[in-house]
Length: 308
Image 1 (tube, rainbow, N blue to C red):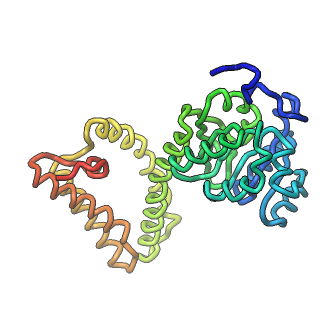
Image 2: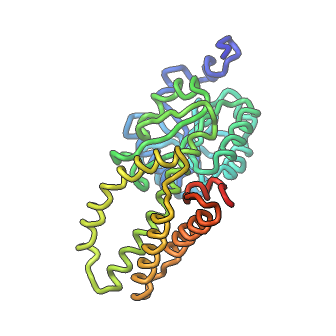
């Protein structure tokens, strides 16, 4: 990359020294996560300017020590770096679109969730208006970004990330993945793909315990104990998936039968088993594909599109 005078990373935005860039930031979007980020910045001694559509959320942050921006333009003007914490990337266009003439020379760190391709298009849009861009995916325990398991994926130009990593460090440990603007969202959404069905499965499991007349509290230690085996399954299945997926006709039929047992146990006590029916449908598709092709076809292969 050319590091000449025209490089926006090397220029100091008007009105801000390099030291100020590392001690001041703007946060746009004050949902639960945005508010958590503001608190983390303030606790680290970083000056924070905030903007949000609803003023009551701004008031709450100002009461903690943040500065109020009356407009999006004011938030952008206040600091070299603006962190976005919005519902999706469409909201970024709505918000920053109010002040595109204030974007040149700025850095946008969009930590909102969306698809990888929407992140890439969002990055292109921001850069087309003269600003630098990095994307992030916040892997946190709910809104608890201080939890030991919390961290943030980042992607985009490494020189932009490196220049502002110190400023962003109070939010959570950082995992820079690469230059592809969509890469943070690839990893982020892949992990949420695991989390969403897990959360629903946990609800179904505890509903079965309760409807069966037993104690959820008594059950939980066993759930936690079983969870300790999940890293083993992930590691072994990841190797299998690099080689076409885990499958034999016998194992697929066993999983089909096991899914039926879960369905029966749930429906006997009136618990919704939609999730288990979906799982069983995958096992049955894999069985049918294996029998038709005369070779084991894994559910992983089915999801990749390996159909008869």
